[in-house]
Image (cartoon, rainbow, N blue to C red; front, side, top):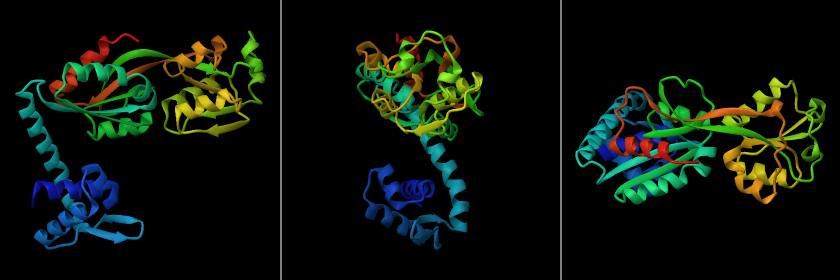
Length: 294
C-alpha cells in the first residue's frame, strides 16, 4: 500500500464521492479511480460499495479507515516536524473560519503575514461556526476562527477580540427614526436570518428570547452579503456583526438604531485541538493576528 493510495482512500471515504475526493486532492477523477483500483488489488478485497448517490465503505473499508486515519496523522506530524527544522522559511498553514471572520477580518492580516513569510503556503476555508468547530476538533485545520461558542469540547480557546451584534434596518424603515424600544414594534417584522449553525443566527435568537419576541416571519439566507442586500432592499430587519457592516453604515445604506435592549457583545475566538503541537507557522500567525488593530 502506497501513501498516495491511502490518502485517496481517506478522502473518498470522508466525502462519500470520487469527484469530491479528486477535487480535494487536486487530481482527476480517473487518476483517483486508478489509485483505488490499485489499492483494492493489492489488499485483495473491495473497500467501497458503489451506488447511484455515491460510495460508502465496505466492512473491510471501515476497518481500514481507522488505521489510515492514524497513519496519515502521523505522516502529517512527521512532515510538520521536518518543516519546523526550517523555521518559517517553508511550511503550510491551513485555516478554517466562520463567515464573519473569514470574509471580513482574516483576509487583511493573512495578506500581511504572507508578505512577511512569502514561502508559507496558506489555505482558508469558510463555514458556519458549528461546522468549523467540528472540523477543528477533527484536526482538519491548523487554526480555526469562530464566534459565539463558549467552550467547544476538546478544543483550546484563544480570545481574539470583542464583537458587537448590531440591530439593522434600511434607512427609510420606521424603526430607524424610533428612539424608544417597544417590543411590539418588532412582532410584525420579517426577520432576515443566517443559516442554522451560524453563530450570528444564535446571537439573534438569544436577543429575541431575552426581550421575549417571537418573530412572525423568518427568511433564512446562507450568506452575510445576501442578508445585507435583503435588508437594504426593505425585505426585513436583521442583526449582524459590526465588522460586517462598517461600509454600509458609513455610506448610509444601512441604519443601526441604538436600543440597549437589543445590544449583545460576544468574543471572536481562535480554536485548535487540545494536545496538538502547533507548527511555527500557526504560532506565528496566531501571534500576528493578536497584534492586528481592528
